[in-house]
Length: 326
Image 1 (tube, rainbow, N blue to C red):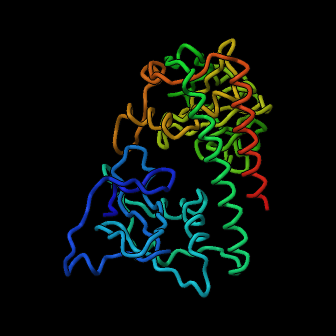
Image 2: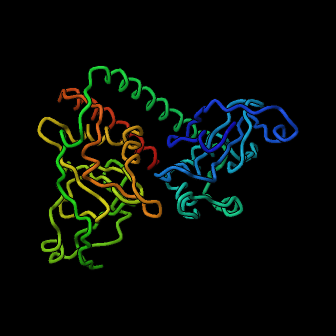
């Protein structure tokens, strides 16, 4: 049975062990191979499940429950696996997320979603792109297996043991200037290896930058969202003339800890979930940094190993970026 709990943040199927009895009602909801299903409700605190899509790999094996929608693909025009990747891509999912409603439990209406427009290439190009995505997925799986083997020598440590809170501007909104030269990094710019400055819409002038901030970010700081989309991270680049908004905290690696490695650590789905477990509020989810610093993470204290793992994930991120540009 495919229901809300069947969806995950990595868009893979989660088998909850729920089975449906064959009946007149269920036989109309049996899925075919290469069907897609989309979740229309989200009960999670992070709000990252809504609009996720699953790919059905077998006919006659699954039935779909209420608040999940069946999508049957016209195979003469569309490659099902490509459409699966397309709908799960962050830029595309934002089109669905923008249509969401509700507070404690957010939802979207299928009537609105089915009229949403997407830019889609010709079928031959879809097939080629799908192969690229499959290769990336295989590469990520390979590195995740290596990562899992490394965990055997790792240690459990509190966040405060390996990073310092470097910048926290919460509760302090600096004066803005549309002609300013200091970009103000907000949540929308995070989630990639480095901040995406194409999504920065606000700036500070020199006076605001010099006199209205409590502290300044540096290259190598880990930017961590604490309000709204909890747990998004990016590694600060060389633009130290930038500032962070009040819903972002910057952590700075302590001695003997490698920033690139810590970025990969925080980007891990399981670790991002740890942050959502201390979320407060429903309308505007948030976390307290005082609680976050007590959250425990599994990591390696070996600097050489940190550098290798950081390099592993940097190469994957670079490859993904390359294919996104293509």
